[in-house]
Length: 169
Image (tube, rainbow, N blue to C red):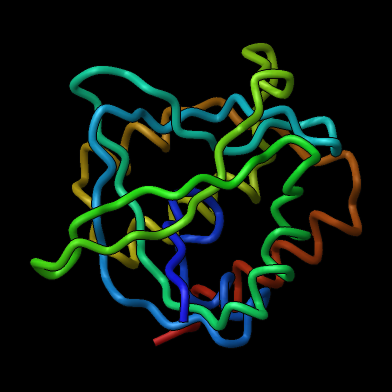
């Protein structure tokens, strides 16, 4: 098994298990000296999450265990090589140091002038709430300006996913 640190739209287990069938939540962790942003330029015209280095900042996330052969599924969903690169990091979870991979925006795909779609931001918030991140952290995500997705079919599909997440026990 390998470990993945999710900090954006993959935070909630329902979302990640639909992408990676072997995903199993291990616990919550933080990545110090990194801040959560919505400045990764996506090929759909919106912005997605990224962590960037910022002294004294903290990014909350979830560590998942996945089968190594399923990493290729996640690489495809995350656009590895097309805006994101994967990076090995070591984090503490349940009093154990765990080496995991995460995705970071390539410098060529950072754009400060874009916003996430409403459904994307909602996925991040639902994951943060499910994992009981601090209210101030969730509020900071909620203040991020989001926009309507012009692709109605994609928006509808993601609204269905949000409904499944909201019905998850």
